[in-house]
Image (cartoon, rainbow, N blue to C red; front, side):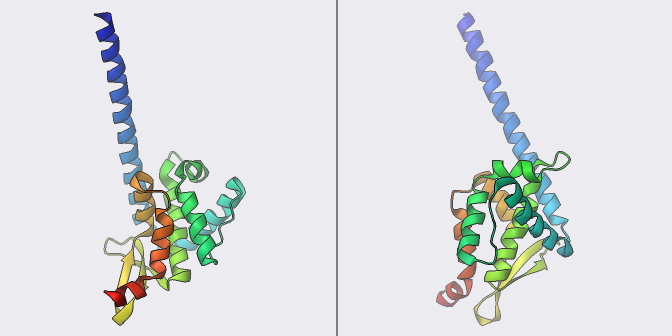
Length: 175
């Protein structure tokens, strides 16, 4: 009988730990999403500079946003290991703050290499607009992409995202 009680207690502890982990992830995502929506366009260069400087200082990784191939690979590798980034950028209990400088760096990459530009999206959040064929444009959300990638992304996905941003005009012409 005592085995059932112990098994039940262990199962209850595991279930509670799992549920608490989900609650923490949801809170972090909500906090990061709200903070990203409040970023003013004039804050973005500072966030990019912070990302480049702190990543090199704390991780020894040089982020070369001017190089389309190396920049995409480096950003992808860094985003695939968010646990290394979180403590570097955390402030005042805002553990997911890394999504702000990381998202700014992704957006800056698209500005430099895909002809993108920062604009305010429909909800007032900073997004990237990339011109494509026929005078149309595509909108991408680099801050949301970082958050989404951490929650459910696959390794290498950020590299593909950045490389696809370079091909949007060609893709639009083919459709």
